[in-house]
Image 1 (tube, rainbow, N blue to C red):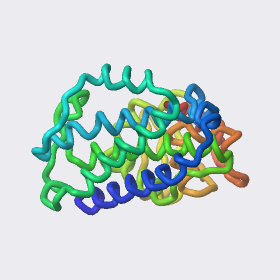
Image 2: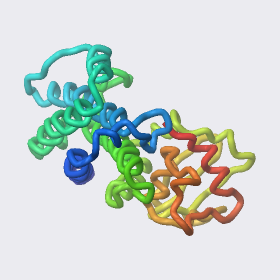
Image 3: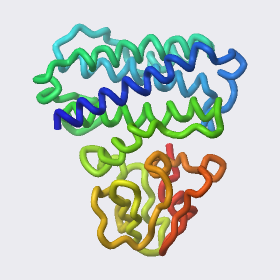
Image 4: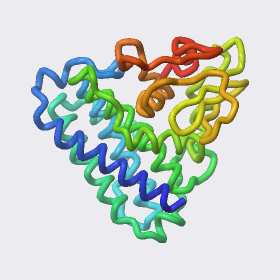
Length: 258
């Protein structure tokens, strides 16, 4: 599991570096343009990531025995919402840098043993769960930012493959909140790069699928975006399709996104 933690921290660093390089060169007018998230501008997507970094660092620092500033989440969100688009973009880089650097500084023992009180889950979770949830958010919203500036942008390939693995393991429970299996009239076992998506009364991701009823033809990044509702027709690469007992449009209904 420590190896999975290490890879997740590396993926968070990669996404951070991509945005930290991109964002300072974004014209102010583009910050208020649409992002891949239908209800957010580019700046608002960065604000969500920045406030998320500020909130996420608190329970991890607390578990690691490090000092942390205490501020109510509602106050954090209100402060970010009141900031200008330029301030939101700069604030993302500042706070995400702090989070990534803290994670990179964790010892091997901490990476293996820390349990994180997320505040909204029934009990403290292993570090890999907390980091996986952050990567799930960062990869999706980093794409929201990038596709708002480049309609051909895809999800970071390494993050996509890692997320599919995490969904098949410690992040599987998230599918119970986000997916809508009742949108299909029959069960489906869809082969995707590295495994499969199984839709019955519930939804699961598996790393091995021997008897698919359908096949997703396309890269892992597109499959990962499907799970977060980010494979809408206008953002679907040429050649991506689903053949078998369900269609890509059927699966889009199962994964409406967030």
